[in-house]
Length: 250
Image (tube, rainbow, N blue to C red):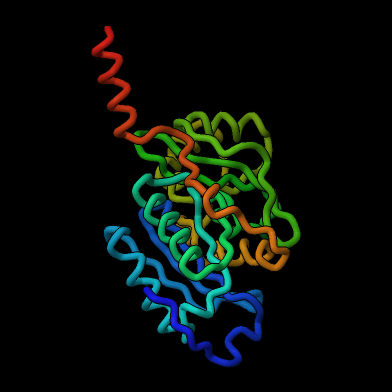
């Protein structure tokens, strides 16, 4: 996509326009918004990310009536999540920021997921399916204007998540596709625990945009070349390579 030189009058009256890209899970989403609200959002699943993200952005810009050259910042979900999706999303976001000469902000996808249920008084557990019988998870507390993480981003089997919930001894609201997938295993250990709606199972680019906008207003973006995906563990290819290497040295 090439940035047009002409700008439409009035579109930027609401402040900086931010383009959000979230590709950490099987559901990809893109969104455009400013501090006045979301101008448009699009989400889809089951399509090769490498081929679909750019066309989705073009459609979204057209529907929202925004020229690419009017984008004042790019926000991208950093994961943890699916390796291929993360690479595509982060690379696309960085390329756009570089071509448009605009700042970029990267935010953990678990933070974005937790933001969707920020109004609860319960402890929030954001949980993304990590495949291979594991989940990515982190805990959060709602604060005015958003959420604050309580602890580190972690990866492990659902039993580890359940044990952490039990150890905390608090009312917990779990959100995310990982919580839904392993609901039975979690309830067997924890007992009564609340699960958010499946409609909130994936981190949304619209929430990503909302979270990132204060960073652009305060002029605290990330350094482009320092921005990397948050993987938390090795890829399947790296694990297979390590296993072969250990077998060869045995």
